[in-house]
Image 1: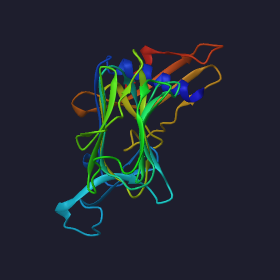
Image 2 (image 1 turned 120 degrees about the vertical axis):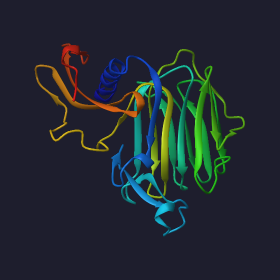
Image 3 (image 1 turned 180 degrees about the horizontal axis):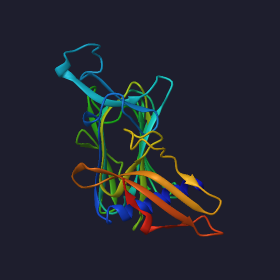
Image 4 (image 1 turned 135 degrees about the vertical axis):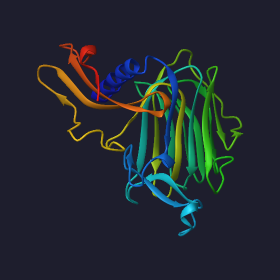
Length: 270
């Protein structure tokens, strides 16, 4: 219940901050500093373009997101409203371990893609009909950097790998479904994620345990008081032209429920 509450509160704020306009969320490792963190257990690293090379000239090195340690599994959650036509794109090199791209509603229903070296599945969970499960490598996946795209058009979802569409894997979604987040899970130290993009998302932000860069010198921990006041001092919101703004937000609980009112008079930009 608390997890869904937080997602709902963020959705309210993000809708307010972005004036309800759908756009693109882009997480591009090439624009981030080495050592910057994102999502859960993810860090920006730098290495050779070809994953099998241990050394190469500086001009040939690239930056990518990978798990912080071999014993950790990384993930990213992009929160924002998705409906109508949209796309989720993941670019990089993928190792043979389990991975997943999931598009979910507030009540954890939705659809998604899961894959590893000998199995792949594009399936729905409570939303829509269709999909397919197959043994074998993901069709069209290359040994180098690849693009995996989930595209939704006119209520129909398909998967493309390097431009090749999955055969027999179409999912027909339920009408008027509104999704609230995208999760990308199973990222290991063997993966090199160069870019994550969500096209057509409204009010997007990344839900992460550790911000990419410090937002301020002050404490950014959210505080809840027994009086029902909820203070969220640091919420990063992507704005126009790639600029990210930091919002300081106050909310008030509507007793005896777990719903909150956003205090618009106390929403400030840092």
